[in-house]
Length: 554
Image (cartoon, rainbow, N blue to C red):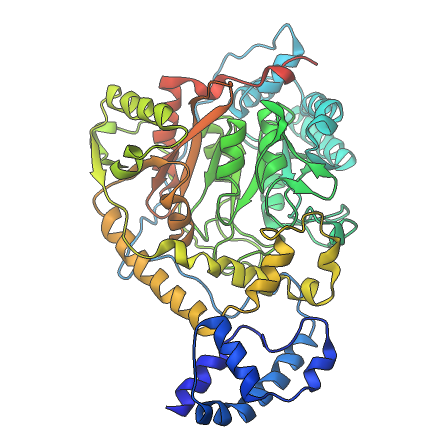
């Protein structure tokens, strides 16, 4: 009994009995009163004899905690605990079938060159392949857009102009030599500034790291280099991947400059929506692709967990972080995803499974679900979402009502905070978190400190419930290929915990003319089917072809 209770109390995360910077407290003896107060924090009580028995164990553990704190651990070092989203007994298609992109053969240069800003990746690819514009010309065009509007949006941390022009010249020469890399050959893009690029700052959007340089290049950047994409800018993110406020300001929504673009992939979404780049890369832990894509009217793909390498990216939550593209169409997202998915670098969570994008997708052969109870509630974009369901029915989709697993999903959200607090433990204990711009109760500095009091036992218990959630979701997904849900609500956290892929895309506008969105979620590793379904919806509705008026001119 005593030993079991010792483990209950010692599970408190990383030594909550210590103040973070008051090292003199380390010398204070642990007493029954100390344990009483500690137990109150985590909702447990102990008898006097139980507390007496714990003291020597707790003092020994406290010394171990201090030893660990004295050991420097870089942000990129993962815990020796890998999250696995694959349900028991689940098997997958391992055959990579040829992917043929629908690149339009006859695309003309516009008479007004500023219109190029809103061409899709597929359209720009046609122009480059057919020698109507060179990679260097297109790169200079988007660099000019970034210089003109980047400050207005507060969306750019660093222009990578020298690197971009060097890449573009090489790609020009390759075309002259008859070598074409594919649909991303010569296409400029933006990169969320939590990915490392050798020779450039990687600020993570936060004041304590604003001069940080990391002497490596992220795997996704190397993959895009190989595909022929041209990095033109490192875009803003809310500090340490939270919100849209970074050390240089607040990234703006191109549809309404008085409003932030949401976060944390704020700059990636804003620059894509405003036509400053054709696409950008973002990351999501809990809504960081979905939310800014909604706010800016872009198309965001959050892939299956473990689908894209995170090597060279800032770690926030090792079991929840995911990398994905933010684009102007589902087809563009497919083109970019095809280039970045799969193993590479040192991210051991990445699986080696094919990406099969079928442009001849037969809707009659799909079972499409919808979370009926979520659509029935009263919420801001309910009318737009109802019209989405109607549009799908007009396309011949027979929607099947589904119910999401009923587990305490919202109570599992502290998994993210516990991992984030560990990722930035040294920032917290050094007091450098005081330099962060946001210091509210909901901001990272306070959340990191508060998360030191999450018991390790409860963290593990939450992940055991998460395991149950994965099995329940697998049971549900055996009956549907894709399901439709409102963008915000139960589904967002649930699927980020289970690792399921989702694509968020514009589905209308508010009375104020600001975009709304809908979310399509799919089976693990079936991004191809999910994106083609989204493409069919977009071709039928056209919301993705509308762009913010403020950025249509030069």
